[in-house]
Image 1: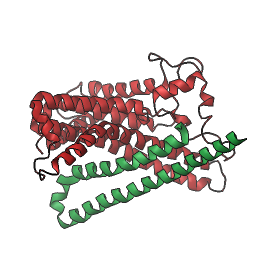
Image 2: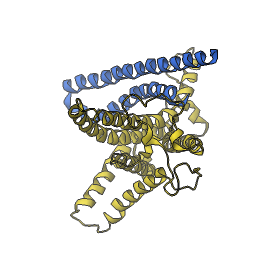
Image 3: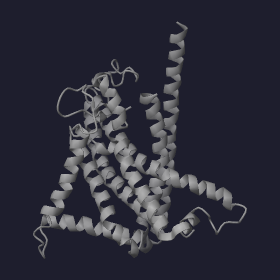
Image 4: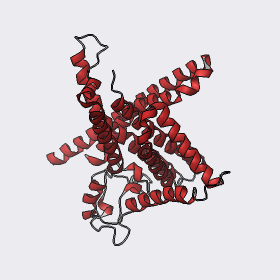
Amino acid sequence: METGIEMAEEVHTEGALDAHAGGPDHGESGLSFHPMDQFIVRPIFGENGDPVHWYTVTNATVWMAVAVLCVLGLFVLGTRGRAIVPGRIQSVAELAYGFVYKMVEDVTGRDAVKFFPYIFTLFLFILFANMLALIPMSFSTTSHIAVTAVLALAVFLTVTIVGFVKNGAAFLGLFWVSSAPLLLRPVLAVIELVSYFVRPVSHSIRLAGNILAGHAVLKVFAAFAAVTVIAPVSVVAISAIYALEVLVAFIQAYVFTILTCVYLKDALHPSH
Amino acid sequence: MENEAALAIGQMGQYLGAGLGAIGSGLAAIGVGNVAGNFLSGALRNPSAANAQTATLFIGIAFAEALGIFSFLVSLLLMFAV
């Protein structure tokens, strides 16, 4: 229901509490809150039911801004000293830089290094958004398909444009599998074409779905903690799942970045 | 009255569909396990080549997982959006 900011916008004209009027009746199941309530986009200033415009400051935009500020803080303040023997913050920044630089070089090749700033920005924004979402009472921006779809569409457009600019019409050779028997090639071309256009969909939904599912599971176990008999089990389970979510937050940022590299490699070297 | 019954049946279908969609997530788990297991068996045979292939491992896991996430999304849409 709250899978996109646009959807939440519609919801807000009727008030946030009616948000799952059409959903399941969860009043009697012992849940005092709904696991999906955490994903509702709310304006920071003003009432809950106020309409959300594109310029409205909501919890989603605030936490995205916090993520950007954290990245800026880490890299501007952390590397300002330019110490030869790096301090704590500077070594974290250098580690992240080296990690992504090596990934771009290994997966995409040396000639793709000019795309490194873009890929590094993507990685850091997603990583910090995912990690900040794990702070209790914060808002998980990357669980919204509206957010991840923009990131994935930007990658998709970049890759397509770079592919055509670099290779011209030869980029279409990506869809024409010249190693396959001639009879099979048209069939494969259709499959390749579909899989090419599904890329931004799966790219965005993978990130949003993972974060959404993880946070929903956390909330479901939090609701079990209210039942005295299974409360200890529930608390242990929450701790374990939280640890898993920290891992997932990193892995999803890594996967998003490495898939960007793979797509970029297709654009730069479309040999099939 | 008839309208109510139709709505109830519709909602039942929604929940059944969401439950069936959840099976897809489980099947994707088998796929992810396959990828990781095969990677491990290969990595134990030739540990020196394993480090270079971790990126491939994650790409494989991501592709297998994406389809499970699709079915999870279908379940979510059935539960909350339809």
